[in-house]
Each structure stands twice: as structure tokens, then as C-alpha cells.
Image (cartoon, rainbow over all chains, first blue to last red; front, side, top):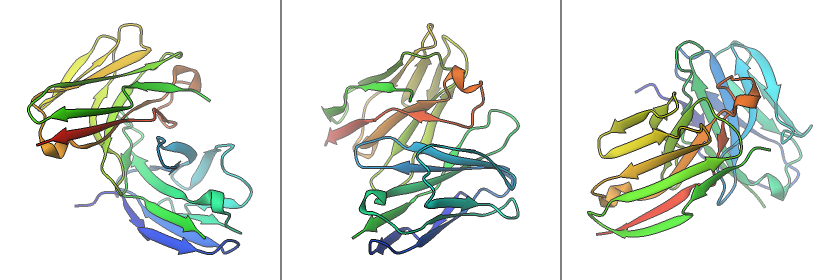
Length: 114
Length: 115
């Protein structure tokens, strides 16, 4: 199965530390998305890549957040100087630009900031 | 930001019962998506709808794209224990330029099925 893969699945860190998450999309998908989900809420859009270009960032993505997709394949999401409010599930999704552009999600990385 | 209102917030049903849930918005959507999320996992796509009035089935699941393009419905027939989970509606509001890249999600309907 070559679904969307996210690593790590869980991350516990202390406030002020930097963390980095990785997402490997479905291999033929050229669009990649990051979402954040807090308890009791649906996922919220953070940012979107088409190939290696980051085309939009949500206002939710503060300056402490940075995402890259250097070769148009995998993507990383880094959070610098983590805060307790960053605790959430970070979800990655991918889609193919052609056709219906349906987004398929990975299992997510659950971040806990102590 | 845009709000998708899902109803009900939670449901407790007996195995074998049918389930109905809905999603409404103040904005027009050009695509409606229904996802299911299990604890600790990512959302899994169940059904996608693309035209007003469209009725689509996936096994015991049936979803409809409302004629006003501001709502959608999901029905589950003859529920089984593995139907337990959170059901989300999602879509790209038309004002987002019609692109499918930016999904707005509802808060979900938590379904519990008693065996």
C-alpha cells in the first residue's frame, strides 16, 4: 500500500524546543497539504504545495512554523520554539491536480508540548 | 472563516439501526466530501459529491449533495460496531476560487454503536 505516510506518529517535547515532522505523499500526487486538528474540532488548513512551490499559507501558520517540499516529493513541517498551544494532531494530505483533486490523508503526527 | 455546521454532534444507536447526519453552510460549495476518522488516525474518504442533487452510495453509506449547494446529508443503513467513529463533512467553499485545495471541515458527528 502506498498511502500517505507521516513520521513520527507521536512526538512529546518540552516547551521551547523545535520539532520537525515528515510527510511522504502518494507517489504520483503533485499536491500536498498540511492541516492541524485539535480535540473536538475538524482539521484546519495550514498550507499547500503544488510540486515544490508553497502556494498558500493560512493565518494559523505563525512565523514559528515553516514547511518545505524541496524536491516536490516529501514535505517537512517544522515548529520552532514550541508552545503548549501547538499541541495538536498534524495531518498531511495529498492529491493529484487532475481529475477531482480528492485529498487523501495520512495517519497524522500527534504533538504534545509539555 | 467559513463554518460547516454538522448535526447531530453525537449519536448513540443500537447495532442494526439506520443513521442520518447532515452538514449545512452559509456558503455555496461545489464539492462535498464525507470522511470518517477513527481515534488516533487520519480521516478516510467515504464519499465525494460533485453536483447539486447528486445521490451517491458506497455500500451501506448514501450521501446527497443538497439542491441549494449549501448542505449535504449522509445516511448509514444497518449500522455495525465498526461504524463507530467521527464523521466529518468537508469541502472547498465556492468563494475560495473554486479550487479544491483548501478544505473546510465541520466539527464532526461522533457515532457510537452499541452491539
